[in-house]
Every structure is written in structure tokens, then in C-alpha cells.
Length: 298
Image 1: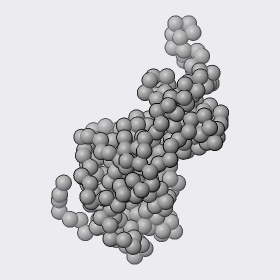
Image 2: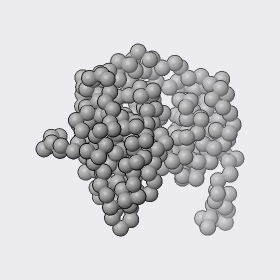
Image 3: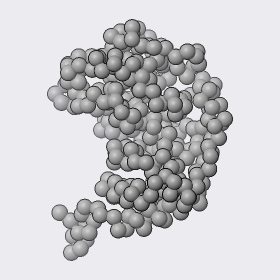
């Protein structure tokens, strides 16, 4: 996808410090009456030291443009499941790099503030973003950070299929992703298997299942019951550094993530069975009433 260059779109990805980001998000910006532009922050942006093609902004910008085109006639929330795995594939990062809020500030305020307004906009202008954190904020709230981390936490090695399932459920993105259990890969996959098999169906179900599973033990407990195999750090490093060499992201098929090791099937199945038992007794509003007299709960 090519087009005329926009001088206000940076050619390289950088980082925008938090203090500069906060000053730029004015009430008029949040209300949609004032547009953000790279030129407003250019003097505050810090570049990355290496010249790797992974810091080229073009592929990310093109991906976001395609997301808007594809989901123009639907609710913007529908774009999350499509975009998350492709953003993760395109934006090759280590977890340490992805923990840098300056990177996400840059994407949200310098590279694609229009996408943030499209995804979260509402009100009379259609560009009113209720939370400044969608531009610059906590990892699970910022527009792009939340999708990258969802892909990182829910992928099964190079398989992004579970990411699509997870990001198709806003309760997972908005609530479940913050829970400690998701840091344990077999636990994350077990929760998704409950959804895939229809054990949990609604947003309330998902929240209830995650809550009881999270309360039942800490990561050490999960690891004792269902060990997670160590990921291949060298394979991950090679994948990160191969940006620009691997095939470009495909819009109609899922890409393949780093080949750093799949989740143990047996470990995921052990926790799936355990979580299902816990969920059977979990308090879910409306679950006990539904069907009690042959009708739905009110």
C-alpha cells in the first residue's frame, strides 16, 4: 500500500516522554476540537539508537489505515481482534521495550492520534475521547499498548489464533488481562479454552471464571499444577531482529509470531478442567435464575 507522503507523519518510530505527552493532551484535544500532530511534539521526541527497520513507521501506519478501512461500517471495537495479532507481528518488540510508555505515547500522539479518535471517539464531533489514557496511559488502557500486550500474553508460541479469540471479547481486554493468572501461559490458554468450548459464553461468565481462577491460587500454584515450559529466548530475539526480512503482514490471513515455544497441551488441559469446576460454583449474576421457570432471567 503506497500513497503520497504526509510531511506530518514521522518516518521513524521514537519515544515521547510522559511529561511531554501529558502537556499535549488538552481538554480541547479530548473533546475532539483540536487535532494532534507530530509537529507539536517533534522537539520532544527521542529516537532509538539502532537503525533497525523495525522502527520504520510506514508498516504500522499502513496497518492502522487498513484497519480503519476494513471496519469503517462496523463498531470500532470489532477491529481489536483483527488488529492485535498483526500489530504484534509488525511492531517487533521485546517485553522490556513494550514496557516503555514513551513508545506508546509516540504511537498515540505522534504517529496515529487519528486512529485513537476513530477507535474511542464519541460525542457530537465523533472524536471525543473520554480518557486521556487512550492516548497516553497504563499499559492495559492505552490504545495500542493494550492490543500488543494482549497478543503477547495470549499467543500460543507462533500461533496467533488464541489472540483473535481473546481480543474478540471486550471483557477479556478490559478486565481479565490485568489479572495475575494471565502471566502464566497455560492459565491464559485454559481460560480461552473454556470460551472456545462454550463453557463460558457471556462477558459476565468470562469475568466470573477469571475471578474464581485468579482467587484460587497465585502463579506459583498454577506452575506447580501445570508447569509452563521455558520460552526460547534466542528464537524470540531472532524474530525481533528479523523485522524487514520476514514477509509483510497479510491482511486476510494470520501471520506467524516468534517460534519461541508453544504452551504445553497437557498443562493447559489440567487447568481447563480445574477452572471449569471452579466456574460451576462461581457467582454469576442471572445464571441461577436463567431457565429456573423455563424462561430467561430478568
